[in-house]
Image (cartoon, rainbow, N blue to C red):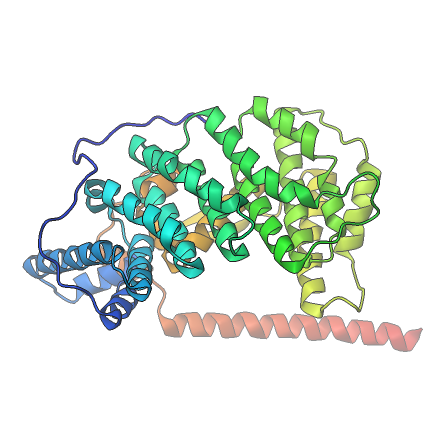
Length: 434
């Protein structure tokens, strides 16, 4: 997955601020975290209300000043203040484009993340790992993001393989390791090494030849799911030479995870299988799987699973996913879905795009649509082209009002209810006839 990278000459990366910053209280930090979860459309609506350029510049300066306070507070002795500062940075990085600000302070922010990962407790480490992922997304595919990745990778590996660390922290580090590698790694060896770290965790769940079943604790299964999903993200950018080795190693072993007692593991394994089949057919048009009949039998069983000992919501979720997985494995098809953001839309028409979008959505949360509109790197990942230059009036016109959304949802709900009632009536008639 070679990416062209250019170092930006706007900043050297150190960027430590010598300006005196007043310490933030926990209340300030929490308020700041909440106040900056604004979307792209919110900022344009403020502009429509007649805010002057001078006020906007002053607001931007105040915003950056408080962000500097967050960066400084990540070095505080109080764990509570450090956590609030990390939450503030996480909120800011996910809701705005801060490339120039971050570029000037990249080394300082990276050092802060590294310190929180090494010295902090579980919750602080989890948030620090998320901030690391968002930092790379902000920097995009560049030399600067590659340096961040290479600085933090040894720490992520240490935490991931340390069994004394909490499962939540290890899972967060696995996700961040994969995301940072996805964004920043420009060398196939870096990609292969990172995937090897993740494989060393989830392959322990593979069923051995002399075993009829594998039993793992719920905590272990949770970690295995996280590492498998993170590994699947990196599959989407594997070159054909590495992909062939992966297919030979994992394609025959992954089906054993379909028998796991945890529904999320079964779903993760099924989606990974569908992705592998999709990639294998892209590499080789006449790709064939040896145990196709056995595999399809398993997938059909999961797509029609009606076992009462499983929770109803689990059965419903599992059947929905495995119908799509079976369709891909048997026919090579994928049911597309449409994602709208502002006046634009994006089609999720493959498992590669689906896995990538779900990862970014989990990280960016409510900021995903803003980044799809304005973040050049995110737009390049989904082949959306450069950001559109739209004025405030156009954006406001494209935004659906709350009343319109209410009437639309009511109409959809009514149509769905009528269709279901009609279908139920037909089933009742059949039952009476029989």
